[in-house]
Structures are given as structure tokens and as C-alpha cells.
Image (cartoon, rainbow, N blue to C red; front, side, top):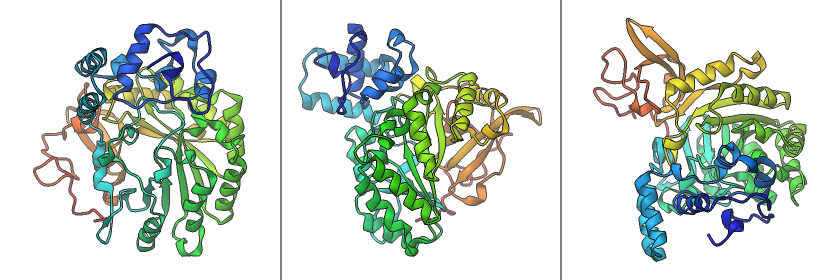
Length: 441
């Protein structure tokens, strides 16, 4: 990076505050790690959310700026050496590509969620659960700023083979005409709210016709309220966005903005509070979710504060997730036992209005798995688990058990309890999930 201003990619914004000088060593770390993991932020985050007097420990800084510890020591040393020796772009890119592929860039078997329309594989759609289709508009495959924990980092890193994106809206609608079991569409990315209002309307408005009466809910997964709330206030097409939201509601559909808030500070500015109020005035819901992240929000009091503030602002706490097993997960991950303890200690601090939240949950290949607790059953200490969603709907809400493991940080590290060789949803005698009930082949 050439200078301090180049620490972040400009998004039509100002520079870092003059008082915010970073040590040369930290600048070097940002440059090295940023070659592997995508990096982008903006002046709203820089000027209103980060505490520049304590960047070493600031959670929002860590959410946006790469740290040395986010890469394995060997990987960091390799990239650092190549940059120091002035290696050519082609040589550096080849090494970086190998490192990225070693970071599990496609977690939870996402490629198995991609459906077919006849002989056409719909790379911009994921259909894992009967009622819900995820749609990845190609124009929404970036964000206002990048989270350092993001499990969709490959989409911003040029790994084209693992990129989910589609601009063929006609194919999307053709698929929905066939699949009347679909009631919910989740627009995701990247972030759909980087698209202009005309493009977003072109995707959504046809779904509001009588032809698609089976589509009852439109969801928009976005970090924009945290990272660029001006999207709903003062951007040139903010009023058009609000009119689109009004139109969705007027057809009798439910509109839910799936907002990502990772820390209470993201809810603290007057700008975000005005944006939340304006969205809610259209009749849209705002449901909130976040992974549980070491260095960011790994204290129960932060979660209880966040949930209470969200309810005060009219939002609905929705999910606490376990950090996905990809990218910089070793930096952010926590043992599952600690995740459960943080959740329950936060949960018992709040009233019933906040207890709409579910978690801690893992979006595994088989489905969305919640940790219900740790108990002793038949003399064995076990994790008690259940599916909140499953590839086979019959799996949902059935409690099942895994051996207690104080070091496990993800579901694939757990083993069935009571001497069983497989969980109830897996193929006989194997740890592969039973694909026979799949509905979308």
C-alpha cells in the first residue's frame, strides 16, 4: 500500500482522521493479510464507529481491518516474503490462490444447494430448504465494507469457480414457477443494497404479480444499516428504495430486512436510528443476526445490550450464529461450550421481547443446527442439539446428542453420543448425510 489513505478502498469518501496514525508494523500486517482476505471499508465506519484512540482493541476496527493473526503464521510469512522480495503479480497471485483454497472457501457444502432448471445449473440460486430460495443477484456481489469474518469472502476474492451470482432474472422466475413450495425469497450476496433502486426493483417487482402468489415473503440480507445507513436516508435513490418497500407491503407480502449487527456500537449513531425508523415506517420488519466472534462480541453483556437496543428500536432479534468454518475462523472461533454459555447468560438478562432470538446455531451441510445445552444423560456428558432447519423437513426440532468435546468449535468436530456410529440423519454406517430425502435434485 502506498500511503495511509490507501489503508482502505475509497467508496466516494473522505480519509482517515488526521489523528489516526497507525504504526508501520500494523500497516504492513494489513497489507500482507489484505492480499489474501478481501478488504474494504468506508468513511462512515472510519469516522463514526471506530475508536481510533484504541485501535489495538477496538472491535469495529477488527471487524474491518485485517490483522496478522487472521492468517496462519506460515501463510503470513510466505506472502510477506514475496512482497518484500518484489515478486511479480502473476507469481504472487498463484501463491495467494493456493492459500485461499486452503481456507475452506466453500463451507457447509454450499455447492450442493445449487439447483437445476432442466439442464441449466442455476449458479445464482441456492435452494437448501423447501420454503426458502436464496438469490444472488450479480449486481449485488460486493458490500459497502467487508467484514473480516465473512464466510462469503471468496465472492470478493476473484475465486470465480466458487462465486454464486446470477443476472438471468428470467431463469430465476422460471424456477419459481415450477417450485410452488417456495414461499420465501432471500436476496443476498454480497449485499443486495449496493444495487441501485432500479436494479433492485427489476428483480423484486415481477415477484409481486399474481403469477407468484405463492411467494409470501421477501427478505433482504444486508449489512448496510451497520456500515452505510445513508442508503435509506440521503443516497440519490433513497426515496425510491422506500417506495419499493411500500409497494412490497401494499401487495400483502411480508418484507423482512435481515440486518447484520455485530456490536452494540453499530446501533449507537443517530444516522442508523433514523434509517431503522424510516424502514419500519414502510411496514417492513427488521430482523437482526450476527455470529458470535472472539475479539468482537464474546461477552454476554454485549449481546444482552444489543438485543435490548434492537427491541427498543423496533427490530426483532433473530439469530446468534457460530462463526463459520472458513477464512479467518481460527482468529474468531470459540469452543461450542463457551458459545452456549455466552448465549444463555445473555438470554437470561433480557425480557421475553428479546427472546425471539435463537442460537447458538451452525449452518452445517445438513441444516441449521442449534446447541440446546450440555447435559449428563445415562452417565455421559453430551451436547444436546436440534435442527432449526434441515435438508429433510422431518429432521426439524428432533433433539439429538453428540459427545461432549470441550475443544470443538464446529459441528463436523462432534461425534455421536452413546457409542453410535452416526447421527440419525446420516447414511447407515457413515458420517455422510442421507441424501435420499433431498427435494431439489
